[in-house]
Structure formats: C-alpha cells, structure tokens
Image 1 (spheres, rainbow, N blue to C red):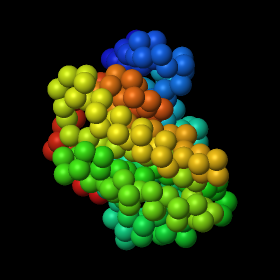
Image 2: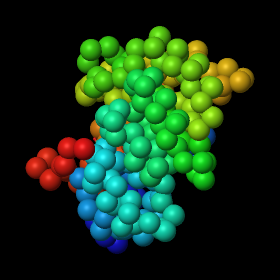
Image 3: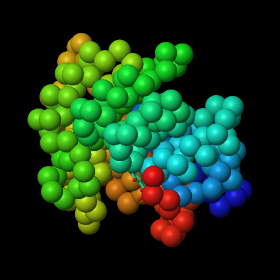
Image 4: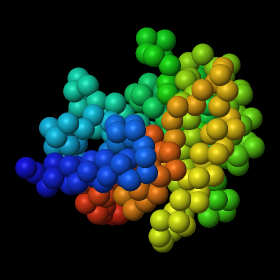
Length: 234
Ligand SMILES: *Cc1c(COP(=O)(O)O)cnc(C)c1O
C-alpha cells in the first residue's frame, strides 16, 4: 500500500472509531480529503484507495488539477477564501462551496452557475468563536443570508462550516462545534432542512464527530505536512 493509502485507511479508522465512541450512526460522517498544495499525483493515489471527494483552497492550482483529472468522477469542494471577482470559475468547476461569508458571493455564484449543471451545493462559513477563528459570518448574519439563498435557484444550501482556532483537548475543541450544531438546529426548518455540518480537521475530527459533524475536512493526516512555500495564493 502507498503511504497515502495507508494514511487514508488510518483516518477512516479514526472516523469509524469516533462514530462508535460518540453514538453516531456508522457511515454517517463523510471524509473530504483536503488536497490543497498537493500535486495531482497525490490525488490519484488517494483515488486509487477509494477517495472521491477533494477539497481545495487556492483557486488557480485547483483549476489546474480539476482539468488534469477530468473524467475521473471526482467531486470538488471549494473551501478557501472567495474573492468576489473570482466567483465564475468556482461556479463553473466545483460541486460544492463551503466558504461563503458574504451575500455578494452567493448572489454571484447563483448568477454564474451554468444551467447545464445541477445547483451548486453551498455551506455558509460561520465565525462561531468570534474573533478567534479565520473569517466567517456571525450567527445572525448566517441566519439572514440563509433566508436569501432560499430564493436562489442555482444554489442548494446544505449547511454550515466553521474553522475554529486550534484548541488543546477534547472539551475545548468541542465547544465551537457544539455552538455550530446549535445554530444549525436553530436555522433548520421543514422548508429548509440543513443536512451538512462541515467541521473537524486532522487535529480535531473526533471532537467534531462528537458534536455532529457530517463531513470532516482532512489534509495533513492524509497527505503529510504541507510545504508552505509551494502554496500558490489564489
Ligand atoms: C487546510 C484546511 C483543512 C485541512 O486542515 P488539516 O489540518 O491539514 O487537516 C480543512 N479546512 C480548511 C478550510 C482548510 O483550509
């Protein structure tokens, strides 16, 4: 087995173990492999080991990989910062966007999503622990934007995403995830069911699963440490 295949199996085992430990239904937590800064060859290795959903943060390198791996049946999730003037390629090439934090981004993605494609799956990024996490809407802003997205035919609002500041220990890690889940419950209605909680990464996926994560976003634990110098910004 390749190093990536072995690491992927270990992450799957962590997810299964956390599902057991925290009374989650087996198979209820999805795995998004975060392949930012990694070459297409790494994605092919993960793919050979059964992984289909990949997350990218830097638009330019993501578009190159999506092009290279066309026809492989992969699902692409955009999880990085969104510049409002660069929404078109996101609307045209991705299946999901996790990082919407402005109404303008949602409006543009809705206008630019091509008719031949299914509606774009979106999550709102929420700054659940206030100033500490990296970007996002306040809970009230998220609730307000969700109502507006309900009237956008080319977007399918799936849920909420958060990227909390790193914390030590299970209890401290669970706190922001618990708050995000509470917000999701508050925002879900029969007309607008939110089925996705995108939370948890390499270091805190157990805490996120304990609090109801449906999709964990894991990079380092699958592909190894990132080399910052190889990261292209947007
Ligand atoms: C990089 C990144 C991840 C993955 O983080 P790891 O600690 O490498 O698992 C998850 N979510 C977002 C939004 C990221 O930018």
